[in-house]
Amino acid sequence: MAIVLRGIHVESQSTLVVLSCIFGFLNATVRMMAPSLGAPARGVSTALFVFVFNGLMLWLCKEFVHGFHLTSEIDGVIAAVILTVVSFVRIQVRMRVKPITRF
Image (tube, rainbow, N blue to C red; front, side, top):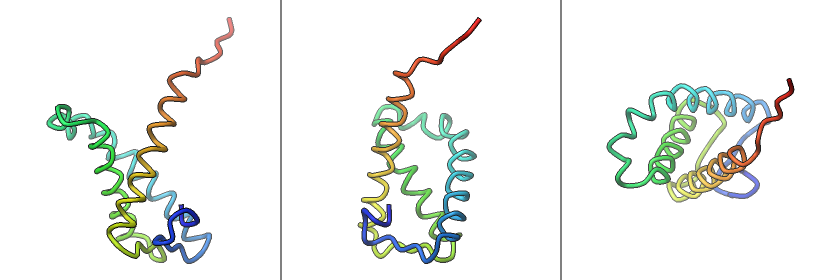
């Protein structure tokens, strides 16, 4: 994403690997709590909740991963939008692909 959005700076490939691991871990652990956290947001929009969730994950990663920087809040918002769109497309593709079952 640092190539697409100039406001994100990753100092090295090792920082990118650490960032990916921490983002994935936070995403997996916090997403388990998402149904209970998102219950009030059902009336608003699931996409809005996912957008806010992705923004929170970016902020947490920025705080915990040395070498990962967001130049401004606008860059964080744009990155959250990109993550939300990619997540939505990934879910739509996964729902359309039927698993192969062999008996």
